[in-house]
Image 1: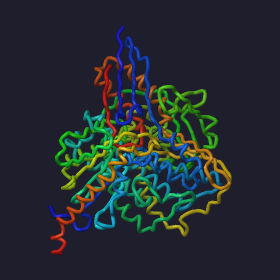
Image 2: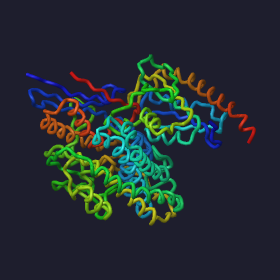
Image 3: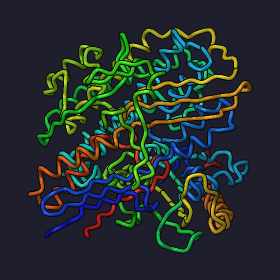
Image 4: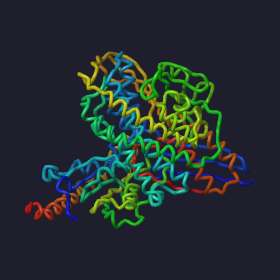
Length: 168
Length: 429
């Protein structure tokens, strides 16, 4: 699918800097070499479902980076294609509005069929989520690797788009 | 002897942060414990040593759903401490910002969280499959609230344009014009929402609550007013701590807030509505009546209807503010630092939010106290669960658990604002 020429690629870091490893997604997007790809929109998001859905609206290719708890060793890096996720992400039944997050936004996007055509999720297994805690060493160590891999994906996408850009 | 526990553990991600534990022995409810983790306690400590001007930008991080409330209570408390009054268009802009927050917060809760309970869906995702147009209307309505916040606040989630004394940059009238167009659609959508939720079936449940909210001489309350109750309290907010106390309870991080020598009380939309029905717009009052609400509603399950009515009010109020707005010459009132103490309360979507600060002569915060609405409602939530479960012990356990969760949702509690991957797990002992 052809990318919109204005903001075809969005990179969304999700998290909260007051909650230890929850900040991982934010740390990744802050570490991206933005000057190398000024045409890519970089977004920091607290991860509420509707904020995410708004953030990825009108984008052709999106990468979301978020801390996860999936049961692996802290610092483990996961990569998912959101279109391939069956019921892999459990939908929250939290009684609060705060439970309306990424998994809910993905599920609703599938119901309404309005997810971005390409939607990749990087997860970093977290350990410490306490208020005011620092990043755990394992997560801190994983961040440069995620930055490297996300940067590679962006550059591959941009190279992929180049012929179209030349034509226009 | 038979005994059972209903355990709802809803913050699987961060163990021990939040849980609901109801113990039943021999057909008697023996214990109801709602465990809540409260980020504000951390922020009270974090604020000490910071400059008074930083309070709105720090406290807004407490909650991704109601950052405006934290900003508003903090700036009003600082302004009361420093003898500053914000009036005219700057005051109106603050109300407009609050309208945005109520629309987005209530929109999310009504459509995505609470409506599925009433219609028998496990969640909004399931509901969206059968009611796509309604869910889309709800999301669009909610988004208009976010648009107000991002237009005035500089961004949607943690607005950066609010300061002690006013704003960093007041918008031009033409900046607000696109919002007015959307709000005209939102007015119709909000009326439809009230009618829709008014048609749900509600469990029969009423208690003799003491409702507490702000009350203003002319307005439905956002930023200002006296602290009043349905059982006769009528105070300046400066006297709040003489009448309201916070108590430690052993099983939760959260403090329980009570009225001295009286006990728990009820804050939030239902309290505001019951104490300020006459301050709603004629359309909001009329639509509430059509939906079956009288001027006083004591059934907490009907809070979903009240949230819809407040959404309609906020839409109309936002439109009125935008129509009357003229950009002020200055975006903020001058504020001079000095040693001072001050407190304020504003009406967060979930209810009264009280802040108190003490700052030294160089403007450094020495003490901060934050009493969030969920801490105030915790006692009432537990009391409701106790009475409700006691009356419905004959229900099958899955249905009872469902209705307990629905009951907790009546209060839209702010259980943990800070992480995003929350999950719910059921545990039966």
